[in-house]
Image (tube, rainbow, N blue to C red):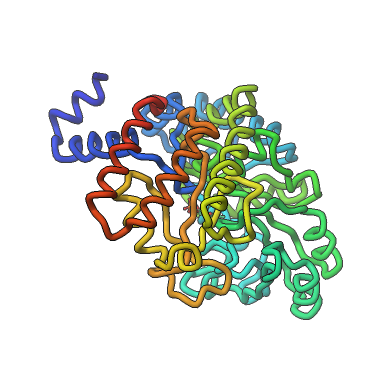
Length: 418
Ligand SMILES: Cc1ncc(COP(=O)(O)O)c(C=O)c1O
């Protein structure tokens, strides 16, 4: 046991016990929440390091605090690595997480009260894309585009119509629960036609873009790309903003002093390490396997009669319509799957008639399971466990049996660093 862990155990056994419980839960169950992952062991080292002690308001070479000679070198490495891996002219590595990262773009470049065009939330948009309950939804006037009900793809004709009518200042793409790949060029084209800026929030697929298996919005000339660092990228919790050189000053000022105070330098160090690891061939292979696993999971579920929103997946996630598939809502499904050792989350489907706490769907994703080395064979087994759990959702004994099966499968795939 490390000195740190021994000290924690001795000083605060209550918290230590919750940590041990959480580690066991992560080891023994299959993590299928698409926004979660198991981070690199090196990230734990950077997060739990002396960088956590350091205040460094400002940017490398222009700080409001002394003693920044090492954090300056470190933050510059993080910025350079982010620029390189995402082919961007500028990177800001300080956003504390995904929500402030998006807020920094809006608040830095869009006047309060202005119009922003983003995906309808039930079709896959995130809270920070203007949910009425979010502050951003109150500060800005969000208008919506949707997916096509026939095939589930983004409806660019409708998007163009809304853009022409509403004249937004910003067009937002990038999603939390959209299982398809999409082309960034039509977004850029439409935004150019109405004089809007473009932002792609690729939080979910940042790792897949870094790994070279999905399109990069910077290649399509987007103004801004934002991504969390803790999802498919497998880093610490945090956010990155990539942008063109012209927007560099505006973004940096918007993050600090506009929105945040001192950056979390331990998190920035962990991000730098993550970006180094994500540039290596092993990560490219990982990203490719994430996609293969999602396809295998989707086809096994569909073969067993499950209905997937859009009829499949091109990325790391899939949304199962639980009402249509098994006549149970997403909340019941999530609970039964938890019992069977498979962690998922309930999810609204496009134009869901049901409320968010009892929605029609469940969202599944492959980044975490792939990190521990699971492949297509395990995805098939997981699909079978899911189907059995759904058919027996009211039978605790059967669910306990499935949990046993999950545990045995997981014991063959250690979680890195745990
Ligand atoms: C597309 C998208 N953007 C932003 C966020 C917000 O990230 P955070 O939870 O780190 O604030 C999420 C989180 O799930 C997301 O899916």
